[in-house]
Image 1 (cartoon, rainbow, N blue to C red):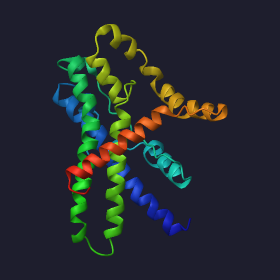
Image 2 (image 1 turned 30 degrees about the vertical axis):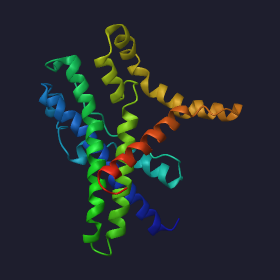
Image 3 (image 1 turned 120 degrees about the horizontal axis):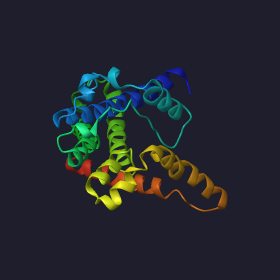
Length: 228
């Protein structure tokens, strides 16, 4: 890939990814602060400044490597916003609101990107394509980030929502999975499909569900915003 094409590809993917991840993490901090936990506030993490949230590897290097290697998926992460759930005024239900804040913010960003398609006619001619590509990728990235994070596996937001809403007999065992959550995700999203491929089986079930759900949500947002 020529250098100019490489730089262009990075700019139209990494820019919306940084914004999506930054707003996702900042939203957790804002809502936690609203419900009484000042941990993120005191550490300067209740901010929409990307520099406060960027993880050099997870936010920049990893997505760039995946993009340049033509990976079938783009993944990244920021420094998690610290939340002391015990400091929340009503820890169990407030934890649900704190967890939902990230994915809800991503859906709001995706909706904003879809609405902004209507403004492309007013963009400068020499920048219109770059803006359009950023908006398209912002729509996809934010929806993927929202849906992925709602998987009911701690420490993902969906796992914390489930822990907050399920009865104790189910919530307590689920919460104990949190230290192993990322290993579980790697197992079901990467290792299991690879093993299945060796056995001639399609075990890429979770990815298929995520792709289908992402497609439906994107189509719904395009329909709502008059783009479908």
